[in-house]
Image (cartoon, rainbow, N blue to C red; front, side, top):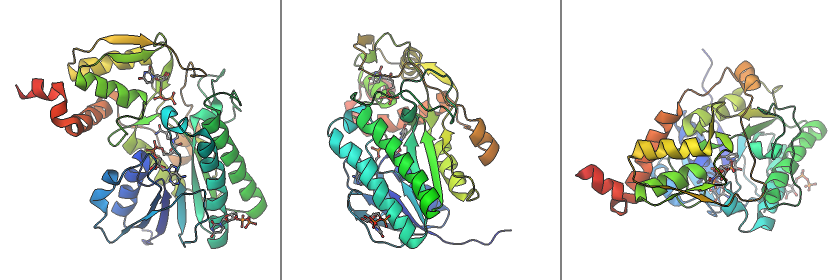
Length: 327
Ligand code: NAD
Ligand code: UDP
Ligand code: UDP
């Protein structure tokens, strides 16, 4: 048996959706967690239950500014992730990815920490290869409205690999595909949270375009398991590695499934497709299967059930579905 070593772990973006689940998991494994966040899209509600735990510490800080702390490992998640949030202040989004990566890499270099980067399937843009393997270089519009996020994340990958080659840093670059679950922001415009909130409120479900575009949805607990396995994998495995669920659905199928699961009376309202919206997306997870022995285990139906229950609790009496369920 391997001896347990308590690590000091820095999680940037730790009060966000994925970050808060990651902090929880690391603490459950017995590690000391320093959660860093500027609360741009994250909220204290996501971490309130962790605040009284002596393994947990939180610091309000913006990753675009230097930071001097002494962790053994860094998970760099700080960055708004939903289109409406990252497009609200696009210059700040690029700065967060690029200056944030430089600062966290500089920190990792000084203290010799291992560092994980939350990259994204958006580095593939609107892909003309399907499903997307890691060797595909992508098809990104560098001047479009998604570019602040896509190109920022691409540049961050470049920085990670240059610090790896030039300074021999121990890096881990994960390309995360659409992930969902409890603690998604109810108003961040992402499809799963939008559809569930609309269905629970009995409002029209807003399908952009004709709904034939596809995505693959990974439940949050599967994703966090992959993060931890990747961080613990041998230093020679640096990525980039795709993490996501390879089961693909059209957006219309997702809408219909959520209406059925909530028993909602909502109708579907078709709206204009935003520009540069990728037509299709599905990860090739062969590399993650082989190197991490990982694949998702939570089916969409099960994950949606947990997420619907979360939003139902959050909306409370405001949700007409709550009234229907009570009587
Ligand atoms: P989120 O918006 O819930 O979390 C991001 C967190 O980063 C928030 O708490 C926010 O306040 C914080 N943040 C933003 N800018 C910051 C800054 N300058 N300094 C400090 N903190 C800052 O989003 P999420 O879904 O949890 O995403 C986490 C990471 O995973 C992001 O880097 C995102 O790009 C990546 N990712 C997520 C998905 C997904 O489907 N959820 C997919 C691909 C990649
Ligand atoms: N940095 C930081 N914390 C540290 C060390 C560095 O925030 O503990 C930041 C610092 O702002 C620096 C950046 O990381 O500009 C990159 O550091 P590096 O040592 O790679 O390069 P430098 O710019 O210092 O030559
Ligand atoms: N989408 C939709 N209705 C919504 C929100 C999103 O039809 O209310 C579509 C969106 O156009 C995209 C897909 O759902 O094709 C996924 O959108 P999301 O913003 O969740 O993630 P991303 O586009 O980054 O994959």
